[in-house]
Length: 92
Length: 116
Image (cartoon, rainbow over all chains, first blue to last red; front, side, top):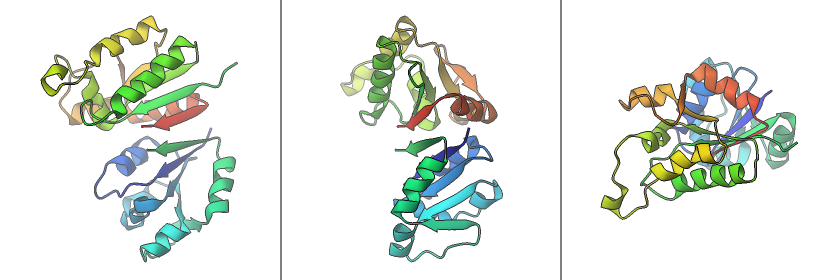
């Protein structure tokens, strides 16, 4: 079973992304949105081997470069991801 | 057959309503015989610390709710061993400690998961 983890808090003020990386499996993916998009500045993200997605508008609003280890999605893409994965774990 | 739900509680007990609300969700689910589990992660493990005095900050004690989990038929109560160790907490009385790999397998087992 695969899980899409949705993280919307900056990893520089909060431990959500750290904990998420610690407990997620290789079939899982992480979707960064809101201030979670600052996670693109976290190199540890791609060393774990999980897929990383970022919500395009949140990335653009913050002028963040898209690294080659992440993919950007729009809202329809977000919906599609939530269908493609068995479950969605939103880190509220 | 109802879909199973894992609630992950990661807020310290007296910083806001989140800790109590996560417990209430689990107790309500248990009252309706839903297959439900509870995992304490990050600062959430502080809810399991012994001998807290909620009255000192004009809050209601959560330990009675924790003890009620068993009465409501909720036996799947877990805590992250990494979070416990990082915070110098002893093995909890009301939860089973799990390492990161076991937590990944735990999440895998449930149909739905929510992190509060």
